[in-house]
Image 1: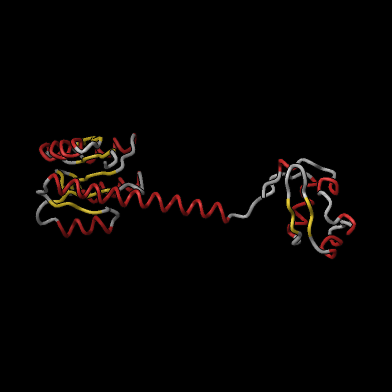
Image 2: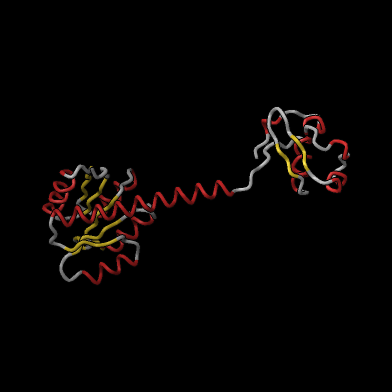
Length: 209
C-alpha cells in the first residue's frame, strides 16, 4: 500500500480544491486546502508538507511569485503547478524556477494519483541518497581525540607522527619504530607496553578511534 502523505492544495477554484481533496483523501493522504497564495504561505509558515499543488493563475496573484515565496520558506519544498490550457510555456518556466513538475487542467483522478506517486517516489529516493551520503561521510571522517589533558595530547602527538596506536580500556599497545619513539622522547624499552603505563593515565574512555 502506498504511504500516506501530507499535501497542500492552493487553488482559488473551489471545485478544483474539493476534487483534489476527494481524490487524495480517498487514496489515504492528508489534505489541507488554501484558496489563495497568501493563505497557502501562511499555512507553510506553520506546517510542513510533503507535496504542494499550486495553481499557476489565481485572481490578483502571480503563481511564479508564490512559487518563489514558497522556495524562500522551504528550499526543499516539492511543488507541482496546476495549469490551464495555454499556460504550458509558463509552467515550463516555473520548473526552471524550482517547481518539480506541472499537471494541466482538466485532469482525471487517476492522472493526479499517478503524479503524486511519481513525485513521492522521487522524494523517497532523494531522502535515501541524502542518508547514504551522510552515512558514508561519517564513516570516512577522521576519528578525533576529544580529551585535551597532557597525556592525551602526547597520544595525539604520537599519532600525528605516524605511530600506530591500538587503544582500549584494559590495554593500549604502542607500535612503531624507534626513530619515531625517540623523537617523541619515549624510550625504545617501552615498545609493546600499555600506553597507560607510559603516560601514567588510564582514562581511555576519553579516546575515540
